[in-house]
Image (cartoon, rainbow, N blue to C red; front, side, top):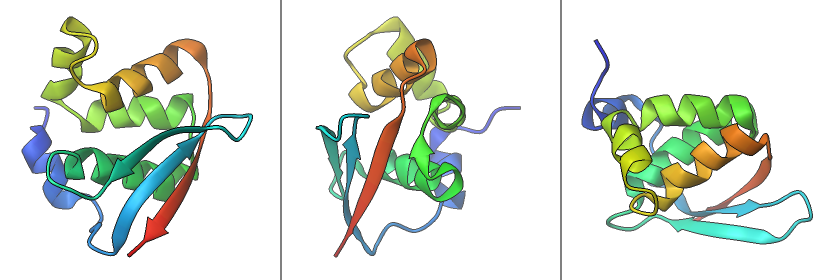
Amino acid sequence: MTQSFKQVLKVLPDIEHIDKINLYDQNDNLVVVIENMQGTQGSLKVYFYLYKNFKKINSAAAQKGLELFSEHTAEAKKNPGSHPNIDRLINIVKTNDTLRVKTILR
């Protein structure tokens, strides 16, 4: 049985020491900043886990991220734009792009 996103969050690494994560495209352009604040902490936890395990967000990392987002992934696929941090992973799987990750500590 698949774990819920709430259950997944409990086992992901702690992000208390992280202020934000910056994601850069292959040309070193800043794509997005995911901040450690209410509403984006779940995404920050997932992206930080992917960074720790893959060192970048490539197709394999994005696929794992979509699994971690659990029920939110199906919701994002039905409603594009409602979950931009999941949409980004879906797009990476489709395009085989890679994003570089930089963590900014508190």
